[in-house]
Figure 1: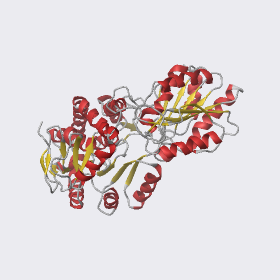
Figure 2 (figure 1 turned 30 degrees about the vertical axis):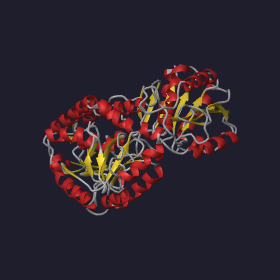
Figure 3 (figure 1 turned 90 degrees about the horizontal axis):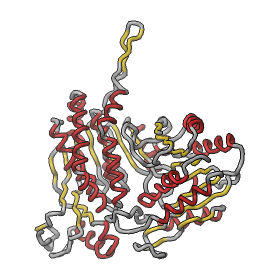
Figure 4 (figure 1 turned 120 degrees about the horizontal axis):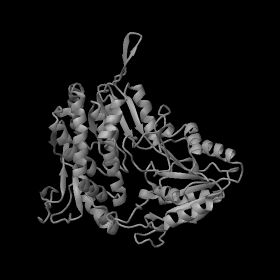
Length: 521
C-alpha cells in the first residue's frame, strides 16, 4: 500500500491502491472532474465521526493538507457537470433507437451476463454497501434481490407476457411492447445502488439509460454500473450512449430531463410526496413516469398461523432499523394467536443489537430521525398503545443514551380496533424501528377477517402486504379481496425475493393506482 499524500492545493498525488476513483461515465467514456465526493467507511464514521466528517469536508472541497489520513476513504466519485448531462442526453437519444433495434436474443444475453457478473462481483458489491453504512445482512439481502430480479427465469417469464399471437376470425392479433427511448434513473438515497439496479430491466427492454447516483452515497452505485454492467453492454455490442452514469446536482438535472428534449421516461425511487409531484410534472411535459415510492406494509396474522414464523417475518421490520420502504410496518393479529405471536416477536427483538455495519450479526442502522421516533412513539402511547419492547435511543454498544444514534427495536400493542386512532405509527410510513401491532377484539371469525381485509385495504400506500394462515380458504378470501399492494405474500418472508415475482412496485402512494397486486404463496 502506498502512503497517501495530498498537496496544499488538494490535488491527489498518491492514493492507496484499495481506494476507488470513479469518474463520470458519459457514452462509454470516463470523464474526470475537479470535484469528487469522498465515501468514508461507515465503521470509521461510527467510531470517530467528528474526525472523519471533518476530513471528508476538506477532501470534498479540495482543501485537505499534505499527509491527510485517508485510510478510511473507501473511494471517491466524480461530480458531473452540466456539460456532461447534456452530452449524456445527446448520446442516449442517439443510442436508444439502435439498441432497441437489436434482436431480443441480444438483450436476453445481456441480462444473463449481467446476472453472472453480479454473482462474480457480489462480494465486492456487498463490501461497498457496507462501506456506505448498510449492515452486512441487509447488503446481502439487497444483492439477493438484484440476482433474483435479473435471473433467466425472471427475464423469460416477463418475455412470455408479450409477443404472443392469436388467430381470431381469420386475423392475427398480437401484443407487442416497445421501449420508450431514453430513461433517466433516480435511485433512492437510502438504498441507491440496489434500487438503481431496477434499471436493468429498462435496458433489457431496449431503452437507453442515464443513472444519477445521489451525492450522499454515490460510490456503490457508480461502481456497479461502471465496473460490472457497462463491460457487459460493451461485450454484447451495445452503442456507447446506451449507458451514462453521472453524479450531478439533482434538481437541475431532473429539471433538464423533464424539459423539452430531455428523457422520455423518468424512473424515480424516493418519498411519496416528492415522487407524486414529479409524476405530475412528467405528465405535464409528456414524459412517462415510473415511480417506486414509500410504503406502509401490512402483515396479517390469522388464528391458525405458525406464530413463530409469522413473528420472524414481522421482525423483518427492523432490517436497517426500518429505514426501508418494503419492510412490514404495521401488524394485524387475530386475538386467538396474539399472545403467542407477541411472545415470539419479543424474543426476535431481543436478538437484535446495534453495531458496526461490517459485523455479520448486526441488522440495525443509525436512525436518521430519532426525534421523530420519540414523537411518534409518544403519540402512540397517548392514544392507548402499550410498549412491549424497546422505546429508547442507545449507543453503539446498545447502552441507553439520550444522544445515541441507534434506536432499540420497538413494538407497541393496540388492544382492540373500535377506537383505533388515526395516528402516524399506523397510517403513515415511518422510518424508524417502531412496529405497531393491532390485536382484534374477540368475535365471529367472518367479521374479523372482513375487518382485517378492510384494514389492509384502507392503507393509502401499497407496496407489499402479507398474510400468515394455515387455511387455504382464508388465504383465498384475503387474496381475492385485498385491492392494494403491488405484491401479496402468503406464509413466506415479507421481504424475501423470488424469481419471476417483481422485487418492487406498488399502488396508491407507493406508485399509483393503476398497478395491480402480484401474488406469492
